[in-house]
Structure formats: structure tokens, C-alpha cells
Image 1 (cartoon, rainbow, N blue to C red):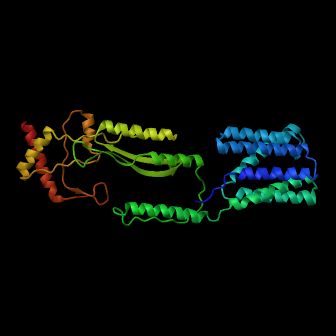
Image 2: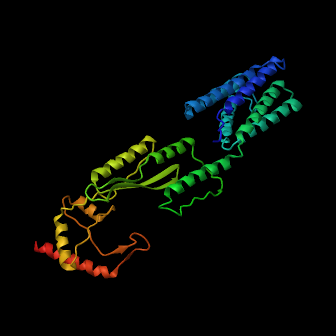
Image 3: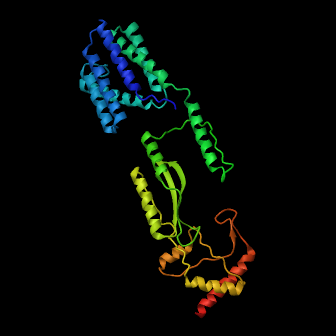
Length: 374
């Protein structure tokens, strides 16, 4: 398993402090109020980041820490004269420091990018402090930051990540192929190089999506107690798609028992609410429980024997049928479903066997006649 560096900020900040302490101890310079303010501001931002890594810090907390840190830097005398008005200048400086802090943080989306830019910027500050504007404090601080960031880079630049990712995915793919080989012998996975996305999920969103997908039920949940081999309740995790500011998960629920269907939907709502998801539900197909004691069914069986000269084959399907809708509108209504032979239903290949239409029509008219005779 590849080691993931998670304490780079501690190493960089500690390296800068140690370097400055050594420079002061060896008599390189006496720390000024400006330097103390800069180091103090860095300490505030560092502690806020450390707390965010350990316990999580909200956006307002992070912004508050940045404002306090920037105010400390400005208040201890660090200035760059842009306008002559002190208050306006301080306001501009505060906005600049907070804005630059966040802009730099947004750059930290690729291994080594932020550390490399920090090392380059600090290096140019050091060159300026040595050759152009002689300033020992700026030179010491710039060299300390540049070297600390450079020292961190070997641990942040991990050229083997792509190979490690591919290896991990292929290992999981092999396990899945082996698991489903008896029913999916041609199952295949492919890894292809793609272009960089314009947007990425936040760590929080990615974590919540994975949690939701792991806890959502999928597949057959219960079998019928009345008819052997009949699925009673199931849920299909049909699709997962990114859209807008989040991720949509589409599920299809089905049950021949109304109470089981309602219980399943409550379970799905609970899964969504646990990760802060918004839920939308449609009415779906009402449940239609098979009734083997149906008087209408018995009459139809008698008609079938008389008209077709054979015993009808009774089947119960785990599917949404209009009988359930009608039964919900007219509680207690006796219903059965029969028709001509259809293949490839609800697909471009759907077709009906023509020779079965006449048989179906004969059964329908004879059954209606039998019902009319009472």
C-alpha cells in the first residue's frame, strides 16, 4: 500500500521556525516586530489548518483565522505603500492577504504544485533581498521557506501513483470477474486515460457519495410466502450520474405487498438522510398481491379448460402492472391479467405472436359472457 503524506504542513512550518531560530541564535539578525508578526500570522493559519485536519473547521472559522492572522501582520508594521490613506491602505492589505491565502490554497489540487510555487516565490524574494534590497530578515525568512518547501517535495511528488492506482483497480477487477464468472463469463473492465476535469468533487461530497452507495440496498430483498420462486420485494440501484452541484442516484423499488414497499422506501429515505441527501419520490406502481383464491381466477380457469381444452398455466410476475393501479382506485376489486404472447416487451424488439391474438380474444369474450350470465 502506498504511503500518503498527511503531515507536510507540520514539517514545513517546523523547518521554517528552526531555520529562523538558528539564524537568530548565531547572531545573523535581531528579530523585528514585523518578522514576529509574520511568523505569528503564519502560526495562526497553521494551527487553523491543523485543527481542520484533525477535527474539521467550517468556512467561517477558516476565514476568521485568516483575518486575524492578516491583521496581526499588518498591525506589527508590515506595509507596502499603495495609497496614502492609512485606513484604506490597511483595508486593501487585509483583503490582499486573505485573498492571496485562499488563492494559494486553491492551487493545492495537484501533487507538489503549491510547494513548488511557494519555493519559487520565496527563492525570488531571497534573490531580491540579497542583491537588490538588502534585508537580512527577508533573506532568512525567504531561504527558510524555500528550503522547507523543497525538502517536502520528494514526499509530495509521487510518480508511482498512476501505476499504484492501475494495479489496485486491476486487482479489484480480477476479483469481481472471478466472482461473476459463472453468470457473466465475458465481463470486461477497461482503464482509459481521460482529460482533466474542469471541476472535482470536494472530499466531503466524495465521502458521502461512497457512504450512500455502500449502504443502499440493491437486488432481491424478499421472496413471496405464497408462491414459490416469486420475488416479492426488490430495489434496483439503476443509475448514478453527476449533475448540477451534486450527484444523483436513481433507484427503482417494487413489491407485491404495499406495506413492504412502504417499509423499503422508508429505509431508502433513512439512508439518504444519514448522508444529508435530498430525496424525491414518485408514486410508482401500487402493490398487487397474487390472490390464488380469486373467484374471477377460478371462472377464467374453467373457461380456459372449455375453450382451449387444457389447464391454464398460472404465473405471478415481479413487475408493475396496471392491475395494481386499478386495484388501488377500487379497493377490493377482483383482478387477473392475461393476454396474447408478447416478446421483448418495452424494447425496440417488442413484438406479438399473431396466432396468439385470436386465442386471447376468444378467451376474453367467453370469460365476459360467463361473468354476464352470473
